[in-house]
Image 1 (spheres, rainbow, N blue to C red):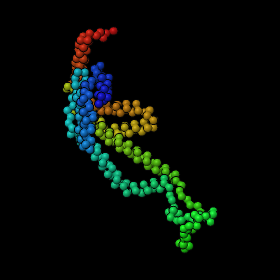
Image 2 (tube, helix red, strand yellow):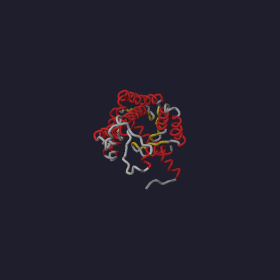
Image 3 (cartoon, rainbow, N blue to C red):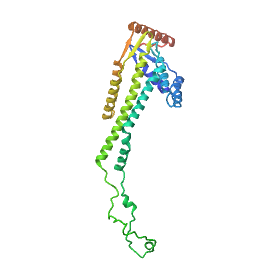
Image 4 (spheres, rainbow, N blue to C red):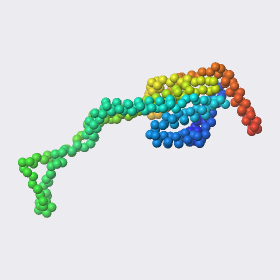
Length: 295
């Protein structure tokens, strides 16, 4: 919680618009309750109450953020968060159910083939038969006690050399590797699809219910477009061994900002009033501390 508090304060206080800085006025004790106590309590509900945890965290961050001396205000409710998260989890469960119906009948066959392709194959006949070895010294007692003779009619000829391990099929190995890669690729795509769905709808709901005095905001981030950006960013990051990460972050942020709008009757007057208020606070603080900040 302390790290989240300091990181949020650092990000806000180093962000500005028209030379007016943002600020975040949080409390370590409240952050501890939001980011430790509530998530632990949600575990006992099998994470069914996690949407409420996310709602409390987002609303706290929004309501404790300010632009200059003017605080932001979030008027949303937890019901929307429950709908967003439950739809995402329901879609995930439905996907795995459909996947089980489509490929469940072939799973056993694939696993048997996978096991046969990589495990040793033993000839059942040779493991069940008794191998008779001609003793080097027949007079030794160990070779003359309790020797059983096999029935001549039922005995089968024993091959001189028995192949205990079959060669591994390179084609099967290649197909197995491709199957594993495909499974991981599908898992990554599912993860991106679920997290992007939550991120998109939570961000849109948050900004659509956020206001700064009389200033309103709007966010219309497209889910399909953002999934495509995240998916291609992930592929490019993997192919470039992480070199593409800075470009990937800028690309995602630029798209999100392009989908946001600000509605204000007179934004210039609000900026001017905030500048005057911030300047007045700075002058009073400077006089109080008797600090000469000039060059």
